Length: 100
Image (cartoon, rainbow, N blue to C red):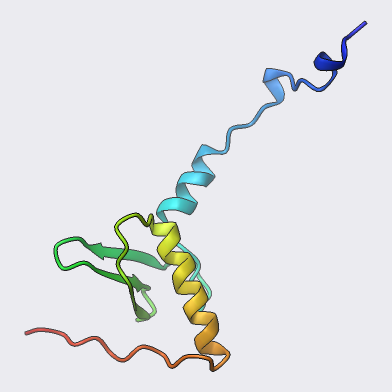
C-alpha cells in the first residue's frame, strides 16, 4: 500500500523540462503585432542606454532602458504600448533621428 505522500509523486520518466521553450521566450525572437510573424527582436545598446523593438517588417519602437530588465520584460512593455497605441490611448512614437 502506498502512503498519502507517495500517491502524488510523478515518476521521473514522465517529467518534462521545458528549458528550450523557456529560453526562446526569454531571448526571442518574439511575435510582431504588425506583420504577425515571429521576427521581432529586442536590441539594447548599453553604452547609450537605448532599447528598441525591431522587426524585419520595418517596425522600430523605442523603449525606456531599465538595467534590471530581461528581453522578455522589454517585449511585454512593447506589447502594452502597442495595445495602447492601437486603442488610441497614446500616439505612436516619432521616427528616430538617424545620425550620419
